[in-house]
Structures are given as structure tokens and as C-alpha cells.
Image 1 (tube, rainbow, N blue to C red):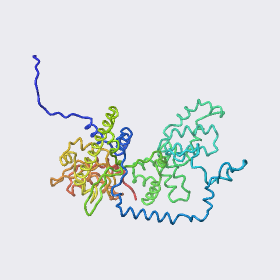
Image 2 (cartoon, rainbow, N blue to C red; image 1 turned 90 degrees about the vertical axis):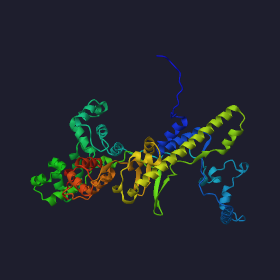
Image 3 (cartoon, rainbow, N blue to C red; image 1 turned 180 degrees about the vertical axis):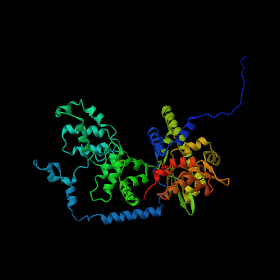
Image 4 (cartoon, helix red, strand yellow; image 1 turned 30 degrees about the vertical axis):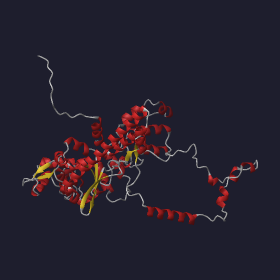
Length: 499
């Protein structure tokens, strides 16, 4: 093959550093963007935070009025110059040479005028505490008890085996085997048997929250219901159901339950109502995680009958180029200093431009989404329209990948709540008349139907599909089952209740 040289014209996209920065800022969440801005402020001296608020300037007349009011208040609050006060006398520091040698410090300087310098041992974070876990809560109660040291070792081993729901995830045999060689435990006890572990387990199960350290669901519910006073209505029947018919309660086979217990439907329903007051996950009542709060990137509100979309100015700080450093970059004569300032100035301009591009793109995309999904804001999820990335991309003249970056981890605050922008995108299902219905709207309809159903005769998937068909929505039974499971709605046999 002969090698030759040839010229060829073509177009190629080059990923410049500026383009890479713009794409990276575009896909950052609000929290990540704040961290990125803070890091840029620390590394680039050309950038500074702008604390000026729009409309905060006063005209000359307003300024004179405010100044006059301040002077008037100051003159009215000032004490009479001819009048001596105790405060002025106390604040006058005596001359050092005039003090006697044995003068007491507190006699000269009152204790209520102590130095404003904080104590060396002062810790400003002393009152801040971490989120309490279930194990911490149980150990705190254990430390307040008068339990023996050997029993405390067993109790701590039991607490270590409790999960966040409050259930004991290790067996008694495993706890016994792990402590069988503990020297401190064996030195404080003459004998150590499995019965000792069971005894301490009873002690741990009496701690708060009630039902903790249970080995299964049945034991967890029994621990809770046995804490009820003996005179509580239907408590004996509820204990009997939990002890003898736990499998039938789980399968909700009420006909078999009525036959075996010889209870009427009303009596069985009353006992079931009492059982439903119990918590199958008692450990979840103890906070073990910090709450995560979402700062919306975009806010939607109704103004004069129209939905208005605007960026949340509280999410990102307003930054600008420092004018003094910008002027210094033009006048400095030293080559190294001039190159350093001009390089940072150029990077600052690129960063501000990329930041503005992110804001403009986010606002355009959010406004177009709201324009399409206006029915959601007016009527709720049932009015959601089918929408895919390609629809928004063609409407705002951007690529689908850009729309995907914009809508990821970006949140929209509406009168109906805070939603991720991706929530407004959904596939479609055909109708009998040839139209389309959003899958999100179908999920909302399924949720509404199951919420309004008769608990004694819950709707099956086939029945829900038939109801949707009557509403001109063509959906199969398996599709209803898939949407129902995505909403964490159990099947009809598990939703059935007596009352």
C-alpha cells in the first residue's frame, strides 16, 4: 500500500476546558454546586461574594430621613450630661498608682463586668450532639440499672445483635458461644449456661421501646400487647390470636380464623383492631439518622392566574469579579504578577459564564416542563401528561443528554410539594380512542382506587383494569400489578380487612 498525504475538511466537537466546566456545573446538584462555588472562591482571588441586594439603595431624601431619625433616637436615649449615674462611675477604671497595695480586685471591678474573652475551656460545640442510635438508647438505660457486671457483659452482647428495627438477629446459641471464653465473665461467675443468656434477654426486652430484642415478629407483638392493662377490652382475645393463630393472621384467612376460634366477625374485627395498634418495628421509633432536607433549585408559584417559574436565589450565593483586582491586573508591571492576575481573571470569567449558562438552561427546561404539565399543578397527578426527554429537547433546542443532566438531582418546589424534575417524565399507555395517558396518571388512579375501596372486598388487579377500561384507559392486568407494586400497595388478599 502506497502512503500519501491528503487534506480533508470536516467538523469535530472539541471538548475545551470551558465546555467541560460548563457540562460539569450543569449536572451538579444544589448542594454540590454550593461546595464548588465555595472551593472556587477560596482558590481564585478574583471572585468575591456580592452581598448587595437589589433595591436596597436609598435616594438622597430617604437617606436624610433615616439619618435624622437615627440621630433623634440617639439624642432621646442619651443620659443627661449633668447627671452622674452609677454605671458611668463603675466603668471608670481607677489609676493603678492610686490603688492601695492590698486592694481586692472584685472591689474595684464588679464581677458582672467580666472580660468578654471566652474561657480557655469553653467549647462552642459542647451542646451539639450526634443522632442517637437504638444501641445508644438501650445502653443508656442499661447504665442506669443495678445489673451485675457479669450480667452487663451478656446484655451488651445481646444489644450488639439488635438491628435498627429492634429485632434480635443472632441466636441464643451464638451469643452463648461468643461469651463462653470471656475471661472477665467467667471470673465473675461460678457457672455460665445458656439459661443465663435467656434470663438477661428477658431483662433487655423490658427496656424501651417495648418489643425490642424480640427474636421474631410473633414475640415482638406479644411483648407489646402484654404491656396492656389486664382490663383492656379484647386484649385476651388478641393474645390468643397471636399465640395460636399467627400463621392465619399473616395470610388474613379470616374464615378459618372464625371457624377455629368460634369468634363472630365483629369480635374478631375488634381484636384485630387492637393488634393493628402494635408496632412490628419498634426500633424505628428511635432516630438513628439525620434528616436530609432538600433545597429546591426552581420555584413555581401562581401570579395573577398564571404559573410563574423562577430560580431559587437562596440556593447559590451571588458572586462577582472583584473590581479592584480587575483594575490591578491591568496596571501591574511585574510579569509574574500580571500573568497570575490575568490567568485568574480569565478563569473567573469562564466560571461566571458557565454558572450563568447553567442557570439559564435550568430555567428554560423547568419552564417548558411546567408548560407541558400545567394540568398537574391545577388538578394533581391524575392530570399528568406523557413526556419524554426528546420532547423537551426538541422544544428548547438542546440535546437529550443535556436534558438528562439538567433534570438529574434538580428539584422543583410547587404548591403540591417538592419534586425532582425527572418526576414529570413518564411513558405513555394507549387509550381505546387512540390517545395517550401518562403512566404517572395511571399510578395515581390506581392509588386513588385502592384508597377508596371497601376494605372487606378489596379490588383485584383484574377489577382495577376493568375500571380503567371503563375510563377509556387500555391497560392489562399485569401492567396494573406492576404499577401497584411500584406504589408498594399489597395485593388484594393482603389488603382485606374485617373493619
